[in-house]
Length: 314
Image (cartoon, rainbow, N blue to C red; front, side):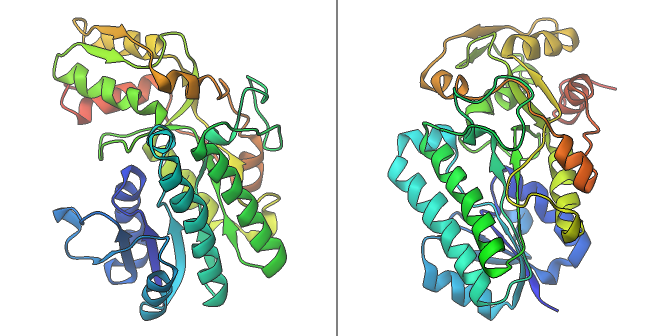
């Protein structure tokens, strides 16, 4: 039996995915790789320092561990990517190409590569965006993620490599800190609220964006991973989303539970990124092809976040 490799394993998504894949395959069949040191809670796993731009090291790791499936999470996110676009290009574009080429050469069975609403742009419809639409992103993150989607579709069509991906909206989680995305304000707001501290939000109060609670994001990824290939009409670019809100709406929802919580608004360079993205996403293709359905509403997400962060009691 082969193993499952997670790149970028110690990021926000990876730390949520590790226990899920452990339950599915067993700890001895999950291989973790990242450029940062493994957190102590994952010290018993097979941990490896890996920069995905190092093709030779990547291929050796995959060959040595007989990698059967890959969850390719290594990426420089939107806000961080604008601070260092060159690094973002190398990690997101060249790194993804390295993953796909190594997977093809070593006959990997399936590659999962999350994409993002960052592939959209001002030219994209603002509401109910379909899978196939105008995409002219102006951030290096968006540009490289569009490239990743197209590469994934190419490797499926040209080589028969089973590449699957979905476009994550903003993700909210209490397990791991966010990693440099434009929608990170949503997680930060919860942490400030439970500490009873005032929060300064870098996104304008009325900017509405698609969002999702991490348990639903993980459920979606695994549902797509397990789906019958013959039912998939898309491959690297399924839309998924749960709900949309503005910072002011999230502030109000938190204040219902923590009345003394306050937020000020001081938009910075990340506001320009947010304005490129739509307000709502059409997830009907994912629902039709592999049964996607979000379980959490905005209200139930807020309740669960505050409960798990110790901000309110049940």
